[in-house]
Image (cartoon, rainbow, N blue to C red; front, side, top):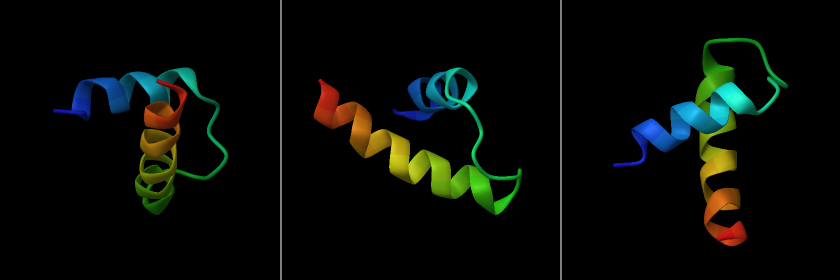
Length: 38
């Protein structure tokens, strides 16, 4: 459900952490932020 939007956000947002575990952390943090903005 959120895969497409998550990938979109990850691509648009700057990467604060290296690839690998960082992607999981970034997505888990960005998704709740998107919901709060909406």
